[in-house]
Image (cartoon, rainbow, N blue to C red; front, side, top):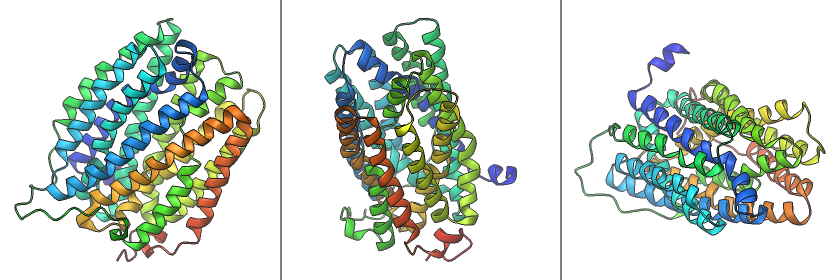
Amino acid sequence: MLNRWRALPREVWLVGGISLVNDSASDLIYPLLPLYLTSVLMAGPRALGLIEGIAEATSALLKLLSGVMSDRSGRTRPWIVAGYGTAALARPLIALASSWPLVLVLRFADRVGKGLRSSPRDALLANVVREDQRGLAFGLHRAMDNAGAVIGPLVAAGLLALQLPLRQIIAWSVVPGVLCTALALMLREPRPPRVAPPEPMVWEFSAVPIKLQRYLLIVALFSLGNSSNLFLLLRARELGVPQPQIPLLWALISAVAMVGSTPLAAWSDRVGRKRMLVAGYGLYGLFYLLIGHLQSTGLWVVPLFATYGLFLSATEGVEKALVADLADPHHRGTAFGWFHLTTGLMVLPASLGFGWLYESVGSRIAFTAGAVCALGAALGLSQQALPRGANRGVKGDLS
């Protein structure tokens, strides 16, 4: 494994480092948002669902645009720098918000930044590595991303323990945001910009390879039950987890994902993406059923939330590696754009619907609905005839 890591190009490690710093800033704030909205701005689950749904749906639309435009121009770096810079500016301004609609505007701006950078960044990663390195590269990226998601909540928990106000804690996210943008400026393009006339932009879903279309429909079903992770933290608080420990739960999830992402995603290079994703979607469904039906807090909280981190390890990098497997090599930015659009657009109905169910009929029904979607997606994916490499690893024929 160490030799495979050493063989990875410089850009893989640099993109991973950028994600580590960026998520340190993002996840300094993320686990505090439910507390900030409910205790400072006096908003409820419906407002939380609206904020996250609109922000993620907007991000998804921009991910398709940035993916198509980066394919057309042959440039990824400008989109990546602009995306991280926008987020670095918007996040700390949440500390100045006096009402939840202003938080919505700033979360919107933060997700605009994510929309600008995500598809070009994923295309860059796919372009700089060999076919048999895809799972490892995307897994390493997710591991470093999740390392930042460990650092951020731990810092947040420490600042909460020092009794700093939530507004001050959120404002400190400006420091890693600036560093992240500086690192993004160090990226190099995997190949020189094309001198030939640019290809026409292709937006139509019908232009996506048919096997990728089918895969994206399954991803859409899973995403419909994959509402904002903030609801998990809200549920933990509802079950009696003390407020200072909420960021620690999120840090636990991210720590498990950090440790597991690289080996599990790299394992998909050998055993196949399909098997890994079916197992991951099934684990998600089981987790949602359990957390929705348990009635009180206890020692089960730690292994249960660790299980969610294991789900992230088995799916986040593997989903993207499978997109790269199924995409046209000359239109990977567009393919990742459609992937991000599919997952992002589903966040709006998923979060709105989950928030409505949570507030109207209770958490048990809301989490059960999410579990049904996940288990349906696992069943659907298990029935799909994917290219041999996606089923058994990249040693097979990926044509």
